[in-house]
Image (cartoon, rainbow, N blue to C red; front, side, top):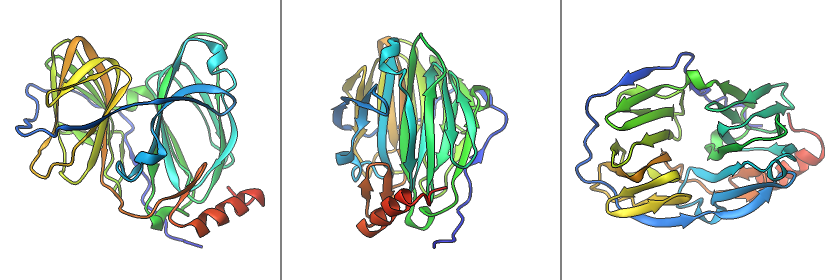
Length: 305
């Protein structure tokens, strides 16, 4: 049994709201390597969603394993929710834009996701949880990101935290408002910090024609997903419900964006690759097939937390 206990995510308890007069310059921005249109699918008990980051992109976008975008005002598309299901070997980050979702898990945690809030869960050696709508009508919209754990941490104890909307730091620039969920941007530290993956997770709101730049280490993998309006990066227009994978050009300093005529809302995500083998079987993500077989056996035997 791996007894290594990783440092828990550092979570802010009070949001920072700051106004910046000038953006950090990115004189040589990364170009767009590829545009991706998500795949419509369903998960849980028939919840309709768009899978944006799929399994075939895991190596390219290491340490990120999956990104789902759920969004509908039809209760029939979400009312079944996500009944009890297991996870092992990675973290889930759920960001709610609209609606209410109740989390319960086998470690005794319970919380309610509401608009603007985040749920950060480290599955570690294993947890069984449910995510169920706490509404009968109205819109439900948000994202779930799967973030890999390094091999040394995959069997750590499970961990869970609800981050309220007012605990997420944000700052403003001319024409831009940025919520810093994880990492740091323009001198503002986010709600969560992760040492191994150095994850950056921003929710960027841009007025029509506004600019936003984000410096990034050259070796970090990065992408952004537009969920309102459109944005242009290094001459490439990215329309609503499209993901742009940014090239890892060694001489680039980061990402530079400009909103279209309708403005733009997008999530910008980047991280340090783990460069480790990825073995996945459904809700289990480990480094080897043998570890996957063990995860399945432990689940069947009721040995998850």
